[in-house]
Length: 102
Image 1 (cartoon, rainbow, N blue to C red):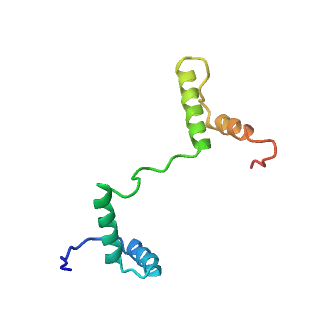
Image 2: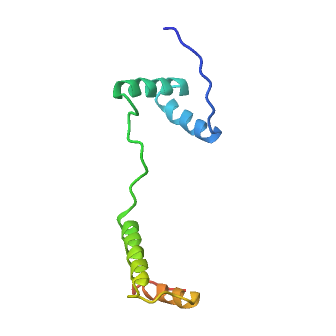
C-alpha cells in the first residue's frame, strides 16, 4: 500500500501517553491515527461524540440556585450582601450539621 507523509504538532506529554496506550495494542501512533481516519471516513465525521462532559447534578443544582438568588435580589425579594464576612458566615452555616466548619 502506498503511503504519504503528513507532519503534525503534538503536545509531547500527550504523544507519550498515547504511544504507551497504543503500544499495549501493538500499534504505533501512526497506526492509531490511521485507524482514527478510517473510522472517521466510515462515520462521515468523528467516530465518537465531541462535546463537553455533562456537569454533575449537584453542580447544575447549585447553578440554578445561584441564578434564582440573583433574580430574587434584582426583584427586591432578597437582600444582597454588602459585607463579605457576613456572606462567609452564612455560607458556612448552611452546611450539613455533621460537617465541621473552620
